[in-house]
Amino acid sequence: DADVTQTPRNRITKTGKRIMLECSQTKGHDRMYWYRQDPGLGLRLIYYSFDVKDINKGEISDGYSVSRQAQAKFSLSLESAIPNQTALYFCATSDPVATSGDTQYFGPGTRLTVL
Amino acid sequence: GIQVEQSPPDLILQEGANSTLRCNFSDSVNNLQWFHQNPWGQLINLFYIPSGTKQNGRLSATTVATERYSLLYISSSQTTDSGVYFCAVVNKLVFGQGTRLTINP
Image (cartoon, rainbow over all chains, first blue to last red; front, side, top):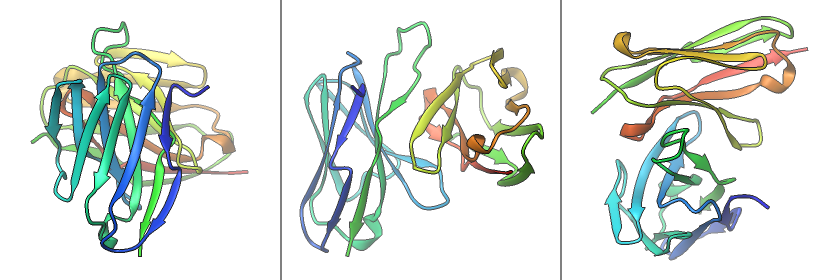
């Protein structure tokens, strides 16, 4: 089984709809992240959480919100989706005290299309 | 904030060739990571390399933190090496724009 899972894997929605993307991990990591990737570009950080009680905005948090329901679960919401939020969304986890440092482990991604 | 620049943006090679991808960063880092994004979009960890050199099969990476760059070497390229290679300054949560590598048979 995959260590970091994302649901759904693909989603098509309409402008103005509320959308939730979910991320679960079995790695036991405290740190979790949400990124978005636009065609031809690198990943940009939306939100991150270093533990269940810690939520931080990233570079591009406007239009998004998150919820850290448990150590293993970190959800991303688009309150009112707009077409320029069409992108590939990745969840990641990391463990800063591991021997490999704060290595990021990524989920398979969610491809979101907003019409 | 920190800037992360990758070069070249695109690279097209024949199978069997060697390649060097570069990642420059504008500030001191204490951890740097290389990833491969395959044609299906999956991100795969290659190296966590804050300094020094690591090797894994045909791939190796070197980071010279004092000079603010990291290099990824791919030897004897195979078509399965195609995709986009990203470096990331993990402690700053900043990714480069990537190098798109195409290996032709």
